[in-house]
Figure (tube, rainbow, N blue to C red):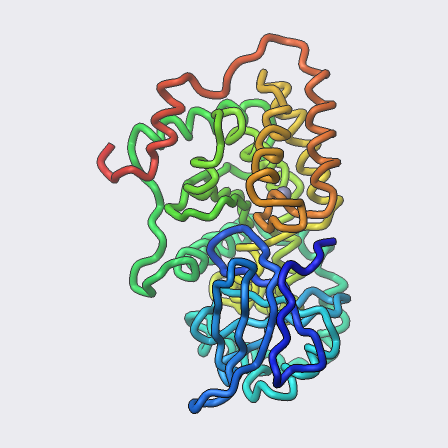
Length: 387
Ligand SMILES: [Zn+2]
């Protein structure tokens, strides 16, 4: 575990030492931060101090909680005006203090379009009763098997649009899909190279979002999203192909649908049962979860293992996955400091070792996933729209 790098105690919090993990919603780094509460004329403010003395100020009245995964004793907080920021508070005394002093903590965090869907959720819950909170989540894994492909695809499509909005600076300009013609051709070439080696439950749809985050994820229905930041961070096309192969592993294992159902919980599952694939509350929860989604360690191991086999049969060394992970680890610090989905901790060191070990199973000739010119084209996929 990480040790705190900064502990600064504010007078109003003393003698209790308050610190937490902070994500700014843009980079993939977890910052260990000190918390203090300052009194301002407009009301009390939570002051979040990062290790480099950068300071984020969130008025206590703007704080909202994010429903956390069951079984963890964390309080996950966001601010009304910084909906992608996350403060993860583990210490019980700090949680108690924040709960006591933040009047709107229990309000839903802001996600665009929430009003209508939240009203819908309340109505759905009122009509069915609380028992679904107990029964339905337990059924999520099984239900994922029965989601009709069309419904799963609609859920993925809608979620994708919500993510584009949530990541954008401006609510009227969703994050751009990179469409440079030559870059897209290179991406398709890489995709079909991998696709040819496997049987998929549905056709893949792979695209790049014009966002700096070093991240990639799969959505229900076979959509795989790579971020511009990930392609930029890769040093070889094989590293991008390795991440793509990992995400294809999630698609084949249907992890996105299962994860969506599980994190959406009762409300989302009800929406799916009643056929509200495209507009249900599931989407809201998924937007929050998928951006920094982590599947279980076993799901990640299964996707890695799938990726190793897929890469080997395509003539691409699985060590590329290890190379990429290692470089990101060197750049972003230890494994606990990385939240990009495919870097999900724990066990990054183990994942690197397994990818290296899988390399010894390479028997045929190595074929780079893209030639040098195509690789340059892929790197320029977000450059402009006209190719
Ligand atoms: Zn993964």
